[in-house]
Image (cartoon, rainbow, N blue to C red; front, top):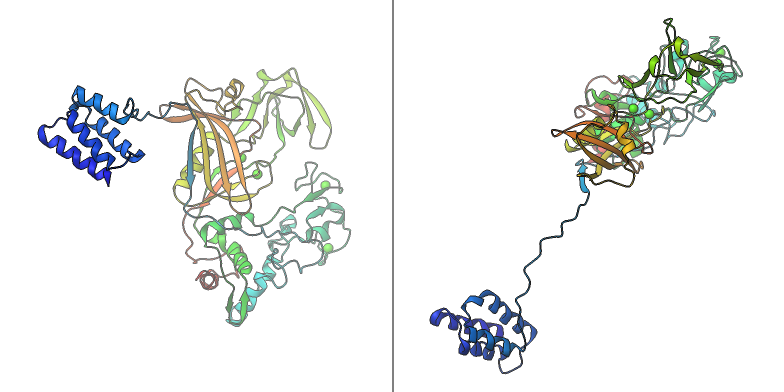
Length: 492
Ligand SMILES: [Ca+2]
Ligand SMILES: [Ca+2]
Ligand SMILES: [Ca+2]
Ligand SMILES: [Ca+2]
């Protein structure tokens, strides 16, 4: 090996007087040549010797070295520091466990009786709760889980305390009130066809408006909040389980865990303000408060608690309103005390900090990803942030956005523009939120949403782990200890 020969020759050269003269250079090259030519590796070795021991070479030795190497030998350039470029900062916050999910177990059937679908309706024939009844029976316990579930969810409309989780039809109709709701409005002991009943108001909410032509879709009503909670509290059931001759599929077990979820995990942390699509408030100077929809375009920018409020002084001369009964009225500024409208957005500072803090705790949490009045609970387990700081701006940034912060216009703090992609479990995909935050003395003091950005409605999570004890108000027949037995067998 001529590399070894080179090194050995170098040691000899340095050993004599700790410098390298012309003859010693020649000896080095003789060692390198090794009776052959000098190849690339040998050249590199020689070059590195020149670089490492440059100060020990005599002037003549250096010249000889260069000549023998066949050209001007330059030591390689020192490594360059990475180029200084102003890039947005990427940060990821991730929970340690990925949540699971399943159907949202819709309350509504398709108007075809109480058979339903065992894999998607908890009250269905052959479903999780009917099987649970069979197990209760086999153990000599009191049955009733499916029947409890099958009580009409809307019985509260007639102050009937026996409310369960069943709605016969996803489209409630005042013209066929009893058959679509399952509620015995006329209290004759049976469900009649084509009973006209006033239970929906002019705003499409439960209430009365003196008419029976209303309808309401409840297809989205279900247990998505309980599924979301179960997906955080429990591991995903992996195998079917047979107990006392009753076989529960993994889907059945997910159903039981859904029914159990609210009774486990303690209370809930809740952050944000649920949007309910409440009608606008029109407050008159005479003390009257009216409800309707403000038709005049107004600049909502002043906050009263979580909602918008504009006082008389800031209103235009006239404000046009559509009242709940559909009539339109115009109020003069002089008649008005203030108008108010529910805000669809929560404080971006609160949302930003809570999502981050909860993910850092290691557990996934839940959000209503629908900023409107529907509620779609999804687990979230990861947030990928792109932070534009120190004057950097994404394409959607503008000075106009800084004028409309949650707590008024931005002040003299540092602005961070945020793009946050939140990963949702259960086929929820991901949502990307765009907002700015104002930082002052290491704290976010204000923020504002990009108007075209989606936003979560509210966030929540159970406070503790499941202990499988206590009562289960959601369905008192579904006993936590018995569910635990099935669940643990399914994850073993
Ligand atoms: Ca009836
Ligand atoms: Ca009505
Ligand atoms: Ca919502
Ligand atoms: Ca909200």
